[in-house]
Image (tube, rainbow, N blue to C red):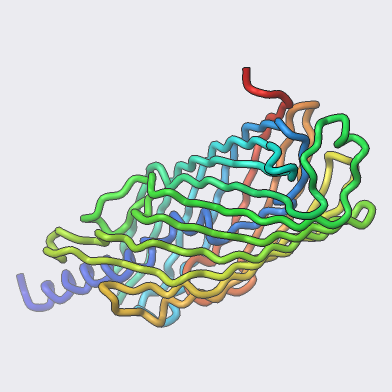
Length: 323
């Protein structure tokens, strides 16, 4: 092999490593870090249950903030999610739990010094669990009490836990799972004026370390540890009730932080300062079924995926205790 050919091969390897290093967080974070969820602290009667099937498609470019000389980077990410929701009383307050199991398929591509490369991943992503309780304006209610209740101001808190259940191979740089735990405590506010509802949430993502990040392979014979700083997140939603079960919402969020470190060495170029805007519509289909359709786009992205996203969720809900 000539020196020129060796140079091309070397650049190709460098590209794959550099490109994949940024993509490594794309599949897990496309699901969790960019959430836009209107009416997250809505009140339901105790023993309300729902099964939710969601399909989400994201497509767009990937920004590297001059961390590496890659151009024309883009991704297409398909995520299917199975979720179960249950409401309950918690010390006299309205509360709920939600468990979600996602499956993702991602296609990525980009160019580094005239060398184009493509990546494909498919498999289970990390599962997520959320517990929420309303501290003000949201007592636990039976169906009879709920029928005469009218929302004014609600103040609630929640905790989301993302468990490392996604498919992960420590010898590979791009994985569906993140091989770490993530926790997001959040404070939520909701206020109703007639047909209008204003929601605002503020939370912080905390991450444990990945003890085996791209290790024990031809490039890295030893073990490497990856860590990530916390990410602050804010959401705002303004929605309007067309009727009690049909509503539309204007959505926006902002998140910042999340610098990553490898074996204790921080990469300042991985700082995230980004926001998204979008719209959501919830449409009743029958007494027990509804559809939720949403669209969002990046308003400002400093580092990472700048995706357009569309998602459709089918929900089947019912009342009653398990037998």
